[in-house]
Image (tube, rainbow, N blue to C red; front, top):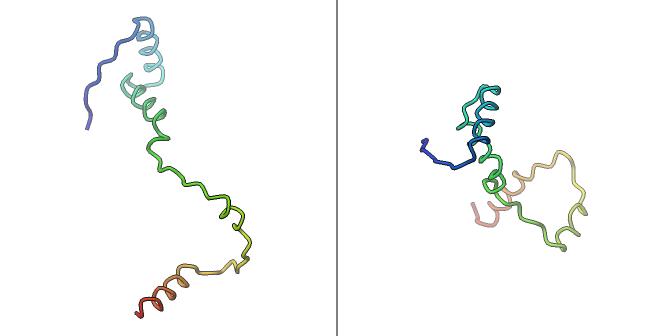
Length: 84
């Protein structure tokens, strides 16, 4: 859903921006919207949780087969745990 936004800028900036938009084949609204999407994109992505130093230290110490199907193993272990 689109909604209207009013911005106040210097006339010279608006003129330059309109010319730029025309050269790019976009509307000024599209350019402003894309800019806001770009500068706020890090807020839209989920934050990646950092590993604790202890977990980082343990990471990679266990070697397994490349063909290891961890989903199958997890399913089997959960079935044992809950007597399914």
